[in-house]
Image 1: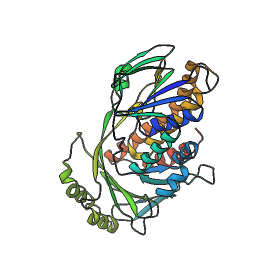
Image 2: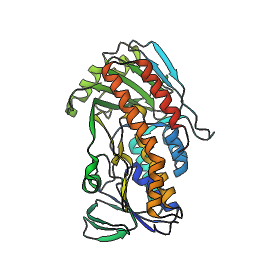
Image 3: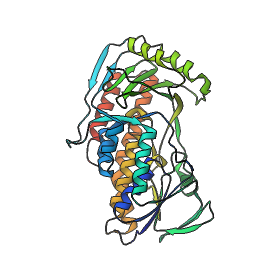
Image 4: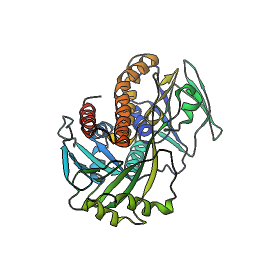
Length: 376
C-alpha cells in the first residue's frame, strides 16, 4: 500500500471505473464508488474484445467468467461488397496460452460480470449518487455528494465517461469530443453457423461486419458516413439499417438484412473521439477511460485502453512513492498507447470516409493490433 493513498473515490461505474475499484481493493485500499444511474445499467448491443483486453480480464480475474458467457475466436476476414474474400488478418497472440486472441460479448453481460466482481471486492458502492462539489488540494480532495454527505479522499478517480462532468469542472481546458463524420449501427442477431470469427465487408462509404458473441448470438455493426451529426428515430431503425445493408450484393449480407426485426436490439450513434493533452491529473484528481481517451470503434479497443489504464493506475499509486510520482508514472505508461488507439482509429475512419487507400487501412489495423499485443 502507498503510505499516501489509503482511501480512493471513483466517480463512474463503467468498465474503467469498476476495474479501478477491483484493482485498488486488491491492494487493501478503501474504495468508494458512486454511479449516478440508480439501476447501474449498461446500454448497447455487443462489444468486440481484442487479446489485450482479454489479458486485462485475466489480470482483473474475470477471464473465466467471460469465457462462460462470451465467445473467444481468432482472426479477421475482410471481404469486398460483392463477397469476394480480400484478406485474412491474423490476430496477434498475447504470449499466454490461457488468453485467446480475440472475442466478443454482450455489453450488459460484461457489465454484470464486472459489477459482481466490484461488489465482491469490498468496494463501497453508492448508486443514484454523484458529487456536487470537490475541493482539490495537494493533500486530498473534500467531496460533497448529491445525498448531502461529505467525505475526504486521498485520491479521486474520474471515470465518468466521454461527457464527464469532472473534466468540464476541473479540467476546463481539455475540450470536448470531436465528431469524426461517421455513425455506427449495431444489432444483435442469431448466430449463423459459418460465423466463427470476425467478418467484415468494406464498401466505398459503408462497412458492415459480424462478430460471434456466444454459441447462439452474433453482433452486427455497420459504419455509415454522415457529414453532419444526426439523430435517427428508433421507429425507423429496422427500415434504415436494412436499406443500408441491402446495398451490399454479398449473399451473406443480404441474408443478414432479412434477419433484422424489432427484437434485434438495433442502436445508432454518431462517432466522436477525444484525446486530452497530458497531464491527466491535477493534485489528487486523475481521469481515466473515455473521460480522457475516447475513441471510435475501428480498432475495437476503446474499452481496452480504459480498463488497462485503471490497472496501471492502481499499480503505480500503490508503490512506495509520492502521489505525484505515482501519477506521473501512470501518465508516462499510458500516454503513447492511448494516443495510438485514438489517432489510428480516427485515421481509419478518415480513410473510410474518403474512400482512401485500402492497403493503408489494412496496414494500420495490422500494426495497431501488433502494438496492442505488447505488454502494458
